[in-house]
Length: 303
Length: 323
Image 1 (spheres, rainbow over the protein chains, first blue to last red):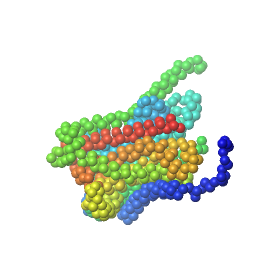
Image 2: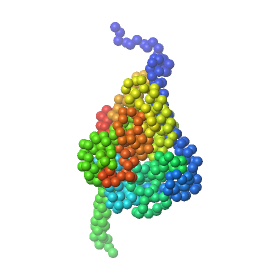
Image 3: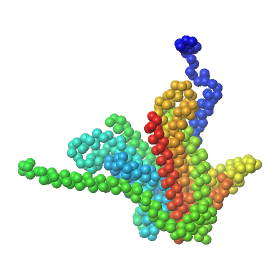
Image 4: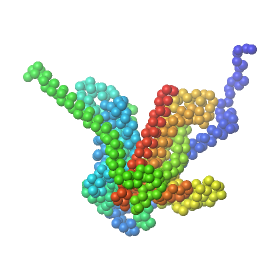
């Protein structure tokens, strides 16, 4: 018996799919088709929802809609959503003022001080868990600690609830951004005798600023569309209420919810137009965030 | 002034710096601990507020009582627990395969230029507010689905078990509709987590499978899926947590009936939806009971989330040993 292997019968064997067995080839194609179908299955709802909101909301949307007060009666046709637009912006803005500084400071702790300590790891895990807390529970929490304490539903309660929802998102995304700042910056700054706090404030945070901005904008966009905490904590108003600390308020999301299940055409029309307005606001925030993030990644590539 | 007089000033500034450094550290540490404080505070304050209702009903009756009649002060939340479980499960049955397939498409099949746009589209799906899904669901989807449900229910009526699960549909606002809406809403989160999991599969494994003459599907089956199983379970559980807590979209499409029905085409209710529906016109013990539902929901979602993270982390640890 010779130990030399026989020469291959066909040194240039056909390795294309044609030489595969029929069954294997069929399975491979079938799986590829099924996987591609998943893409369609996920894209369809997006197209469907966008189309419905654009076509139904677009016909109702007008300058009058954007600038007039909310009708007190569901039956009335026309009217507008100006108070809800203002409410959305000021409540979300207030929530951002509360959540962003604390969230970014928390991220500074995790990335610059805590690093891999047990406390930092625990905070990271708990931030992730907090991201998963249902928004209605956040609303109930603020209802208990704020609304029951001051005995009134007002805009600030809504801002508090949204801030609690934003906080973990901001903490986690800001930490990812701080991780991208090269260690050399910190070392160079320290070598020049700069104290650590000053290094963080004048070197680390500024060089991560675009990443922090884009992460924050995404968190704001998510908060602007929240409904559940708002209907629990904010109460209601039919005209613009710029004061977050007295009297009820309202947001676009809450108005969509109130009007959606009404049997009256006027109310349903307003719900669609409000949905279009809300999506437009959320979309603008998201786009700005993406543009900033894209520029940031180019800058970091340049080094 | 000679430099010999300088040290005291220098020492003083060093002390100032140290003080500044220390207070800055305390400040940011405090900010980091806020997360823990809020979580603890949520649990304590809501439990405390719900206590009268829990004591009135008794914890066992509250969790496993099937009758919810606030005007008679009877608070049994089993129908909502059941509804939450059923709608989340339907959502998972649709969302998990689609999400995993989508993640595979992005990581293995899509040409390089198409990856970014596809990811962006999926992210856009995540930015649509849940109330908009609810609006489209209740006005456009539900009426269309009602006739489809009825057709399906007639089709399977002679088959024993199926005719119970898919019974008569009186409206489009059902467990099943809520499940479909939930599926769409949790696809983005499961997809992005699954993508992260697939990224951890060592390239050498894939190349080895190809080198042995595997087709792409055989490579996915042999190299990617076994490697990623734990991570995919974790990703799916994160989606489950999201589905359980989803409020507004479900409130609009689930129908709001407080009963337990094996018929998926029947209206029902979930924990989150019941809170959103009744909170506005509740008072006294009824409000406390609704907050009690919130406590149970909070506990459930926290547990599911923690388990999910644990599963993902264990899967990651296994990879580190493997590659």
